[in-house]
Image 1 (cartoon, chains in turn brown, red):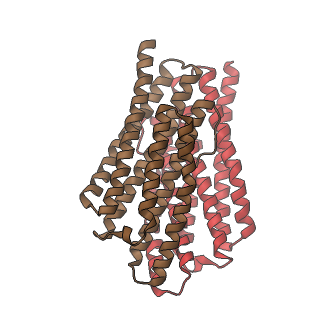
Image 2: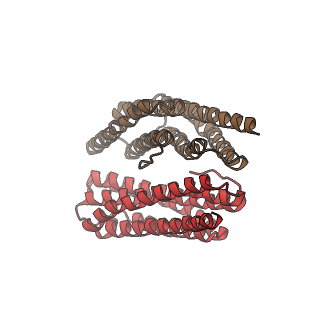
Image 3: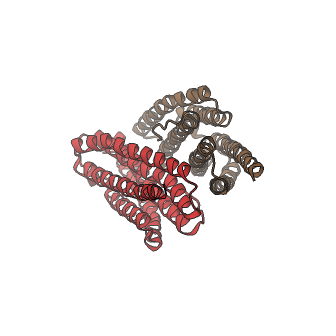
Length: 216
Length: 216
């Protein structure tokens, strides 16, 4: 029974790694779909989000099974309880990548990143932040996690810059208003992705130290 | 030991009720702060969000303690694991109420609800949806939860209406552009509040049936 239990614990970690990878791929694809206005790719991401949701449910089910099967020791329990929390943030990042892709479809093939210059920068920073936070979590590297967490300030500053850019564009009155509002919504999704990456670091911190910080 | 354990389980439920109440009060206050442009109230909500965050941590800590103290039976475990998930949604609703309040401060005492008419309606529907979802959860009333969940469509439609209103106002070109973008962000927060209320219903469904649906 203990052997099975240890195998399941290992499986839990593997599944988290898989989910992290899927989320990262989805985010990378959504960056490309937006930048290249690739409709097929955007639709692919929206459809693919279901696999991320399914994996979340499988991980949750495994966590419940592990909790029930055998009384976990304190450290195992922390691993399981943290997994249960961290999948929420991973799933939300996946959702937001899908939301960005869906929104990208509304620009009808125009290259909006030429208009709002800070959006691709924001996408790049978010992409890197998520990558670092996930890698830090699965390798239990607190220092790496801390560096990922520090990037959130950059994301927040970039959000303000995107907003200021959109105000300036609207003042000029040459751009489609609907598009401008959609840029703002995309920037808001990216800002939320940054918050979820911060949460991942905070769950890593709890996993390693037992201390809970404010999640966002 | 069993007596203490049962007392702690009861305490967990009481704490969830308390957290639900705090979140509801915060949301109600944020509606008032926005509508009446009450700066003192808005600042009070932003400060008060810390109590909600603290309660979230206390609930999480109690869940971990309950899991560790004694191997819970399957139904208790579901209660504990669901509590661990549901507090995330409650805390996020609290966060968003605080975000709305913070944003309300940027209108400098103007009555923006006269401009974007659908925002107060959206606030009213969200407020009711959250109330129903929380009450359904704490009283384990699946039917009531289902009715709360059904309101999310209304919230999504209202979001589109707010967006269309903002586009029309921007086209007219008479309103402050910054304010218009902030209305959109507030509407986005409200839409997210609807999603979190839906999640609360879905955790209730899991608690009652063991079936996990897609959370948003």
